Length: 419
Image 1: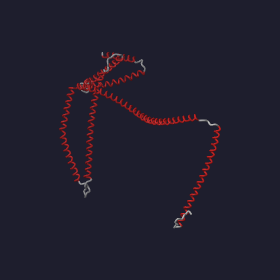
Image 2 (image 1 turned 45 degrees about the vertical axis):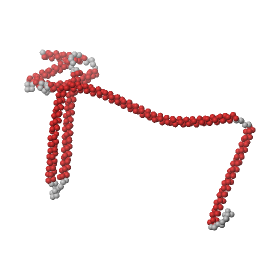
Image 3 (image 1 turned 90 degrees about the horizontal axis):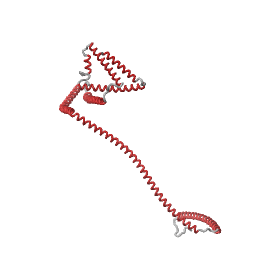
Image 4 (image 1 turned 180 degrees about the vertical axis):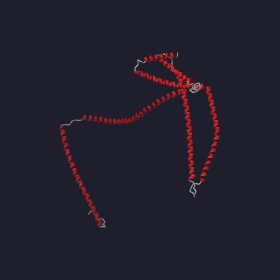
């Protein structure tokens, strides 16, 4: 009966495969390659979802006390079906039955796949709500694991920092001890006979070091004794807070979850408002910068206009002065024009005889002017000659009187030296 059933299943599987191949026989190679890539991507997504769902089931089983390696779990059931006491033929038969069951399951999945390809079969995937639930649980687990790893790393970092600080303190202390040893022993007094360091100096240094160690140990013991009650009190307070937190978590978890959701909604609203205000602020800042630039341009133009206005006012004043001067010249020209018009009205054209007579008199007057100019030039030359002769006579008379005074120390009173 089992063989007949297997043969029927194989025949159904072959029929389904033929129908499946017939469904894709009319497609081109490019279309088949595209469908293959799409199916490979869908398979990768399903593999990731399956792995996530297996982690979710494993954690649920662990939470219920039936894990992968726990008693009653899948591995334990497989070990019980095969037998852990080395049953020989029974073990082989059980393994064969298990393999046959696996092969049958694969055939059933294949038939279900071909039926699904033909339009039949049920839903082989999770609903979106189930996927969200599994993904949220997996994400929470990842966050918890990440938080635990972060805490472990922080503790390891604190341990490393403490070890580093301890090593630094020990290194500083060793350097100080070496410096003290060199100062007190190596560079200390030397035996005058042997030329070596006396043993008393070394013994004294060791004794002082041991005494300092004992004193430091006593100080640390006192500090340790004073810190123990504080540590015990803090541990008690921490345990009390943990107990209170457990009770609160057990009693008011739903209320705290609701409040947390409300606060998250408020935070999201405030975040959106903050983003909107930031956008508005950036827009206002851009607008302010634009208006500042425009204001600077307007200020520059205002300065240019003020300078141009001053120059235009100066030009206007100059033009007004020129207009006044032009008006005065115009008035004077009008007066001159009126006088000229009056003169023209009174003007009379002379006759030809009068013109000839006036011309002859003009020529005569010109000749007289030239004659008198020549006479004046001659008179000026004679005047210059007379003045030069007078200056020479005066100079000679002055020289003669000085010579006479030098030769005659006594001068007769009333004598005329001109004679």
